[in-house]
Amino acid sequence: MFTSIMIKDVPEQDRPRERLLRYGSSHLSNQELLAILLGTGTRNESVMDLSNRVLMHFEGIHLLQNAAIEELTAIKGIGPAKGVYILAAIELGKRISSYRPNERYVIRSPEDGADYVMEEMRILQQEHFVALYLNTKNEVIHQQTLFIGSLNSSIVHPREVFREAVRRSAASIICAHNHPSGDPSPSQEDINVTRRLVECGKMIGIDILDHIIIGDLKFVSLKEKGYV
Picture 1 (cartoon, rainbow, N blue to C red):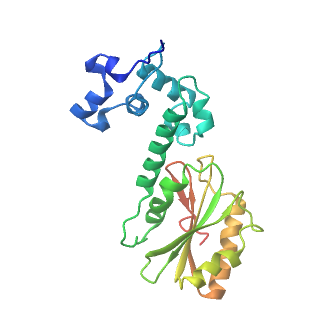
Picture 2 (cartoon, helix red, strand yellow):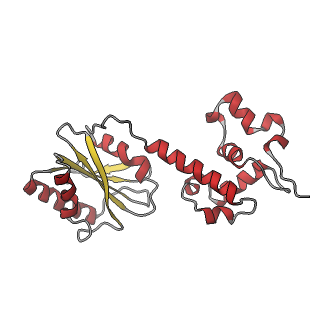
């Protein structure tokens, strides 16, 4: 008869649930947190061993955050139920990290702009071009993803950027896009697109305040670089 190895079968001092209750979730390793989600192991391995194998498959949590259900269930010992638990936990974590309070966010510096979009954009696997539309108090009144794909001046058309600004009666715009490589160093095309948008903004009367390039927990402000 098939029997799975559950968390309760792990020695008490090593049980992640008990450790969480005793010390708090921040004291648990990624392996222990994942073991709690999985709940049980398999006939031949403990839940801790299974969680470790899942993490090794994804080389840690960085790639796990983009896992698909098909990739998870292809791992021996991970069925649809366990896969769903993992995906639900990942999505909940993403939503918590990107949650914005009801009061409007004020952007006073490039750091403020980068902080607003960092957690959402740094994990994207393709380039996304996002516009933040601000009122006269520099409060974010709207955020919109306008383009997905490699940035170039033929794709990022000023018409699309400023159309939403006019609809929202925005006073100014902060543009942002991510570099999936993690390196936010601007390319010549990034600079060309920025200059084009700045010039169009001057003609329309809606300022481009900055163009922020998002990397992996780091960013570059093209305003600080002198291109805005």
